[in-house]
Image (cartoon, rainbow, N blue to C red):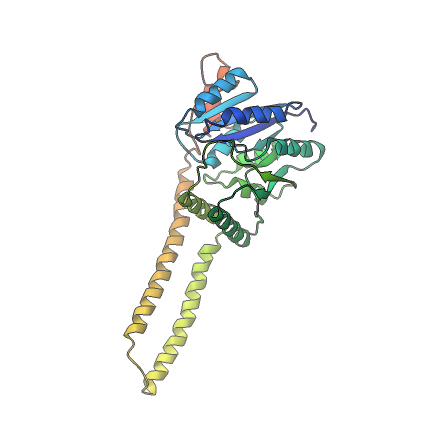
Length: 334
């Protein structure tokens, strides 16, 4: 039964966030002061002192727990691990740099507690000092994905609240390469929106680069639509029609004695057709690579250490059953 006393899990993926870990925990606990909340940090292979901060926070406050990966497995894996570790009737995924305001997280929780929506989606209405390149790339990416996959993801983010029912659905999805913000849209579950203004980072630096953004876009577009593969067929049909017209024109010119030297034309056609073939092979290769990654069925992440309540079950260290659950080797019963 939903109420303002229901337990809410805050999932915080963290990569080299030593400078903001304590600020994030303090700000969230302060915002949820009158509510039942727990925080799960997921250290995604940080190389600074992030994990030391998390362990310190978990010792000081029983409402804070932590999961540490053996290396960097990516934000999608961190979100997955956080939701696997969540004990709450609902869970909110946030960034640990406090760009997603804790006060908005409280609004999302209250909206969930009073209504019957299974997902509360945070929608950006403004972004402080956004990089023009990132803004343009983001708009182009979501525009392409929306048209190809039929999902409206404009101004969407990973800032979402998931009801326990939505969490269980997400955990049952077997794909190795997931796209969290699109999966919630794909599910079709009753969703409400909560608008917020993106705040400046509380500290540290962004982990996204131009190359990472391009790889992220390609992976997620090919995860939710096969239209690029179909475009290869369309391109083939177009060039078939072009070849028929060009053949007819060439024969006509030959018969009428008006044929000219065609060396330049041949070179241009070879270059164009060769480019189309290479691009087509590249698209096919992307999808084959995704199939290859999926059928290996490797764990989405590997956990090396946990901190907090679960780690203290036997008084000595990480609970092995919990590590198996988080690594995907054993299902979790609720």
